[in-house]
Image (cartoon, rainbow, N blue to C red; front, side, top):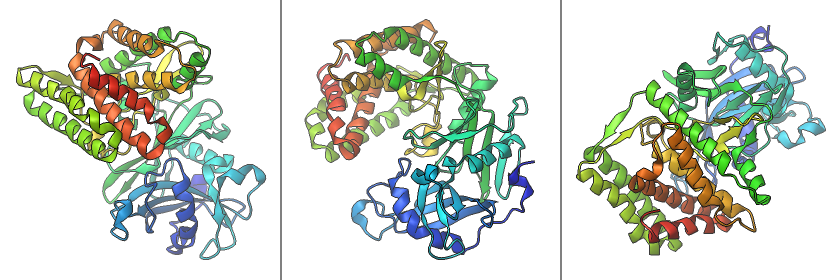
Length: 465
């Protein structure tokens, strides 16, 4: 039986968060998955705390859900908003061995852990292994529910290793057999990162790894999804890294792009079978168009370089509304919501799979779960080919264009309908995505701003692209 269920379950004492607060103020904003960068942390509230391993031993482990208080904007000072809630796995030791130095959070000077060292526990094989054992045994620890598909087995004793690549969440690989994705910024409700892969598994779709187990909690009567365990595709290549490697060698990528288009269409087809679809007529299209126009106007205010193109870009959205007014309708369904090359894996056998169905984490959960035209995903992938092409110098002339064409052809071959046959809606979604990219790059990676701006110029000057 696992350590998770042999020790008495105790919730953490009230002094725990106060003792950790000075360290978390410094550590949290440095994490890739922290969404509140650029705004000072003014305080913390403890939402839930569960002691998974007692700190009196050589290693302690706390599972914390912590609400972070910050100003609504950098200029608002003390006017704080409700704050995002984050999932933390806090390890406790007397001192860290050298191998865990990158995981250091800090040394506690007061409170119940005074004199101990705290660290990111996912980097430590023993605490990380405890999570897998709890999922294997379907443990219930305090308010945490570790659940598993009864049709799938989890072999005990798999060695854990943290994925160190920068991510918007955190992942642990177990013995090259499973990968556990722990959601960092959590919100109540049905999370599509579990909902959609489960629906696809029921449809028998092989393009998405079927969830093996998952971690949930219920707080204040609201369900929270905290983590999802799925099979690990050993030796798989990340689509973004694979594209960059081929670009660096000036190799053609169109065959892979075509296969990826087929995989995307298969996923869309399965989602349309598994979950309800809706028809978008004029009444439904107008709010969609209005939201795109509002995002464009806000982006033009935030990024002066975008302003000269705004009038032409607005026509991309207005054209959709015009078609709707003339009686054109579109089908909306559940989609990936944040599809790009980095969300795709190619196995050593050449099979493409899609991962990370969380959608754009910054958007409200209700919005991420809304049915949308499948072309939204297609537009995201087309923009990703463009990003890859601009990431390698010297570039390969025509690389992005050939990938875009091959991807659309593959999508059509798998029964998805050729996206190029719906140029008005495709242009609108590509424009909306490029506008988002301009704002993101201006705020976070100014050196990358020319990449989306080049697409903005193309989309503004040629309505047919």
